[in-house]
Amino acid sequence: MDIKLLYRMPSAVITATVDQNDWATLSALILYMLVIIGIGVFYRQRANKSSEDFFIGGRTLGPWISALSAEASDMSGWLLMGLPGVAYWSGLSDAAWTAIGLAIGTYLNWLIVAKRLRVYSIVAGDAITVPDYISQRFKEKKPLLMSFAALFILVFFTVYAASCFVTIGKLFATLFGTPYILMVIIGAVFVVSYTFLGGFLAESVSDFMQAIVMIISLIVTLYLAVSHAGGVSQVVENVKQIPGFFEFFGIATPVVENGVQTVQNGVPLFGAADPYSFLVIISTMSWGLGYFGMPQVLLRFIGIRSNEEIKQARRIATVWCVIALFVAVSIGIAGRVVFPTALASAAQAESIFIIVAQRFLPPFIAGIILAGILAATISSSDSYLLIASSAVAKNFYQHVFKKDATDKQVMQVSRIVLLLITVVATIIALDENSIIFQIVSFAWAGFGATFGPVILTSVLWRRVTRQGALAGMLVGGGMVFVWKLILRPMGGVLGIYELGPAFLLSLIAIVVVSLLTRPDEAVLAQHDDYLKQFKAN
Image 1 (tube, rainbow, N blue to C red):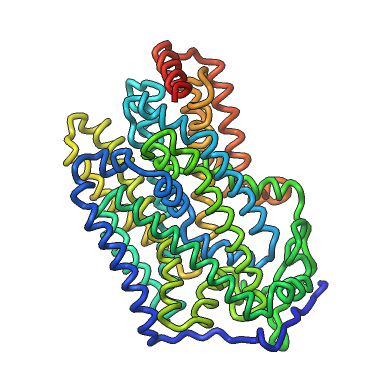
Image 2: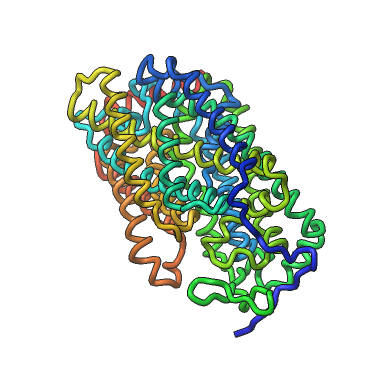
């Protein structure tokens, strides 16, 4: 094997240590959490007026809150931990092409779907959840589409919430040396308590604030890493010496034994670079397709105050997303120079953001910056829990089991389901060796392939039928499992990310089945009404 040693500057040879008694850092994090709880308490009365207020804030979100809360709820802890961890471990290509795909997907989702979905959700019986919209879009008499949509949301958001609890566990375990499992449980209790209080409106307002905290934390952390590495030119000069590390069409391969990178004379070892083919690039960029099916983002489209504000929201969301993704990838690259041997496995690499902030900042300031991870995690996990519980309460309980359920009963059931989801997600998160990026990638593919093609065709194609939508959901969601668990391990051309092929097959299923079945005249008339209102606004 071709082995190359990583060159290091003397100033970059730093051993990361953890101060278990760092009360200043802890106090800053606690202060931040108290502010978040305060937001939930403030909006509690408003949230409990009706299920519409609880689930979509009464369609009162302004462009800034809509845009930044959508991005914050989407960019969970993987933005500050998972993505920098990928860049730290294997270099630029994997992280950068993922970021490029996500940036493009963000813009296109706001451009193509946002206004159309908001208008259609009102035309289709004033739908306030994604399953509700899909069902009413096709005027279901029996809630089959709604039930499958709610089921997929429940499964994939439980996995998503687990990734958030893993993030919390790693954060506090790394910072204070506390037991990982204990931190996962405490984090889950905090998140579910907060989500109980305020519902969607509190979640969206706090997500807006958290988006600000996240972007500031990212920029400050990148500045610290680059400055302690000797500047941008020094970072580039060092990482270029690692085969494939600073390339778009190659990928670095750490030399590992039992999952731990080999270190020789204090220097991490890398093998020859592996190629990063065009097929792999397309596969990685397919992350962007996931946006079309993300319920937490789609709900912001439904909940925005007016159609006229969507253009402004699109610009805000895209700029935030591009900056955040670029900085996150850069932190991983610079972190490899500053701490070349501190993080010896792919799972440990996801702590590079924490190590940089903790090492180079005064404890209290470090706590404020690291609140960015809490911001990312809370803003996502509360969205996941709320949407999953609402899907079950609104779409299973109210539409299938108890059609005369009151708003109060629906919200009570939603909170019970929220507790149950939290318990399951916490159990999934108890594995300390979990890799956040891998957990998120599976759930992301699940949502993108299950809902993305259905949402796109529902707002763009008059001819799509209920049978076609159902076929697309089942093929997309099912193929994510098949490709991930059966086909991808075979390697070769099948070793690509499951979202791309699952999305494509779902789209094909929708088109083929829709052309083979007859559309309902009432559905066509509703679509014509939607088009008139869309063009009028």
